[in-house]
Length: 406
Image (cartoon, rainbow, N blue to C red; front, top):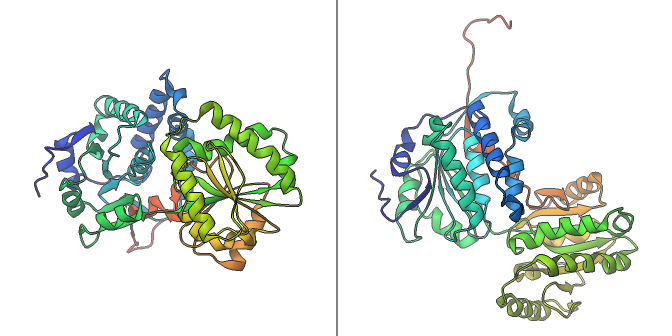
């Protein structure tokens, strides 16, 4: 099939590389050349003087370090021989600037040639990553140039449909509507598909442990990074906070002013959010009897609920809007732990308590339980999906004669 790329803008790769991807041989997962590429990308990003302006860019640079990649490789060292599936098509979400880079990384680490549709918004972080990657792929890592193309094209373009017909794996990041629209384009019969649709997340804080924390400002900073950095628009950004323990009132009174102080100093929010937040509260109050607005300003809006509900989570507008409740146990999370629940960040809750909760209730959601500050930290197991195994295939080799194990 001939690809019409006339309306596409390539930030990494070119039309020729994209057209050749269906015939590009797959690599083994965690190929040394791929690990070298990401280590070089890490160094290139960290050497930039403006990297500190973008916390998500600095986080990506650290994520790509060789030592970090070697740690991620360890679970895959034993077992069957694997190869990438072939060509992977990634549809990146429009609300997280660097999600495309992590998706591309997963595809490369799994051994695939990757075509990535970038968000329509020209995020500066994305431009910096693409420029660094393009420089590496046209220089020391030219052998890997056939394995990566990052491009931007209009939604009405026929490229997504054309690339879907060619690819061996398709990864869709976005809202439910985006997933439905892209899934209408047929894949090859043996192609794999992974869909990351709309989801929400929550946070649990044990009040006694919080008040005993030696550096509560640092904990507030980590919470701010989990929520405000992407306008609370990421699926992994907590929308609700569940307080546990007898000192929850004291803990709340200490915690929220610290978070608000950071937001006041650093968060640049659009004025339209003020109206959206007030409208969201009115709709939540109409749907959830007993809902109370706990704040007067718009920078940080807190809504107390008798219990967390899926309806309230759905009405969340982002930008520093937090549902809040207090309870005696993790069981209070259950109403919002359906299939839409992705991440639960926490402080002061033991892992055994989460295991007991999961065993007792077996919820359809809650795929990640991570400490506050790590909500947006990308993992190769995401939404409960092992990306390396899903984006590669096992090649089973059975011996026909007895072999000497040495």
